[in-house]
Every structure is written in C-alpha cells, then in structure tokens.
Length: 296
Image (tube, one colour):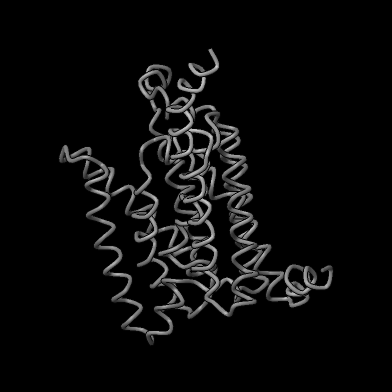
C-alpha cells in the first residue's frame, strides 16, 4: 500500500521538471482564484476569458521578436492587455456602448490578430504551445517570473481589498467617498492581465482563465462569506493543479487540460453536493418540512 502511494504521489517529484511544474502551479493557484472570486461577485465572469484573448497579440509579438523568451512575451502580453482594456473603457465612455460589449469586440479582434501573427512567424507547434501552454516545460526563469507575478498580485489584492469589496457591493458609495474611484477598477483589470500573463506559459492563453474561474465558481456552493470563498477556491485550485500534474504524468495526458478538467470535476461535484444552492441543498430544503411534519 505504501509503495503504491509512493509510486503515485511521491516518486514523480524526483524529476526536476515535475518539481518546477508543481511550484508554478501552486503559485498560480494562490493568486488566480481570489481574482476569480471578485469577478464572480462583480458579475464579470466572462471578462476573464475575454482578457485571455486580449493578451495574445502582445504574446505573439514577443514570440516573433525573441522566440520562446518568457520575459519578452510576458511584457508584450501585459502591455497589450492593458492597452485593450483602456481602449474598451474609452470606447464605452465616449460611445455610450456597454463596457462588456466593447471589450468583447476588441478581444475577438485581438484573438484573431494574435493567431495570425504566430502563424506568420512559426509552425502550428508554436501556436499550440502559446494557446494551450506547457507547464512541464517551464524553466527556472519562467518559474521565478510566475512566482514574482503571483506574489505581486497577492500583495496588491491585500492592499486594495477593502476598496474592492466596497466597489463590488456598493459602487455608488465608493464614488461618493472618492472622486477618482475608477482607479480600483483599473488596478483590478491590471492584476487580471498580470495573472493571465503568468498563466499563459503554464496553461496557455485559452486555459489560463480556467484556474481562475472554476475554483471560484465551485466555492460559491460551499460558503457565503468572502474569506470562505477565497480560502476554498485557493485550496481547490491547488488540489486541481497538483492532481492534474500527477494524472498527466501517470496517464500521459496533456498537463494543462488535465488540471482544468480536475477543476471542472470539482465544480460539477460542488454543483451537485455543495452546502448552498446545489442540487442536494435544494432537495434537502424540499424534504426538511416534510420530515418535521412527520416528527410532530
């Protein structure tokens, strides 16, 4: 029994690439789910997906200029993501169009431009690497960058936490307190871009959003308190990233999809059996009054 456990859970980490992959996955799991929780609270769940598309042209330009150099691709991704977010905000203010509609338009254009740029500069293998990532291929430089970005996100979230909570729950109050309340929204979008830029190397631009949103949406079925939501989301993300890597190692499946599918399985389990708003919770509510009547 012990030998089986050792074979499945311990011996894979004898390899350096697995150790680097798991540390990268845990670093992302610490920073991404709290952002996902705030996106869910703000009713902006799909913005994360759109943002993941927005960074692609910047990543592609970095790739064309310097090959698979993560720092250059990351800088390109951050700059392009922030630029597109600002453009979408400006269009919505000037044209009266809703911000999510403007964002959707820009992000679809960005995705097409990014794919076109990568296809012009390389083979389909390169395109697959950028779109779907390769967590098992991260080196020490990439790991340091991911850990630094994750640390920066966690520290910044801690600093602006109260303002973010107020903006989610009562934005009019925040505007009344500060003339320049829009900075909270801007900083939050900046953190979102940073997180997705850190995630594209490991999970790719298309799946980086999965580690942010799936644990956050699953946590809603287990807690009603904000700190509870964040704690549960982080734990689920850590379990999914470590478990996904182990599955990938033993079953020879792609690492990124394995991680996201495990997070997806956690979401489906939560939707069925969670404490609040799940199918089991609804059934419990229906049967409880009947049981009380029988006891009388």
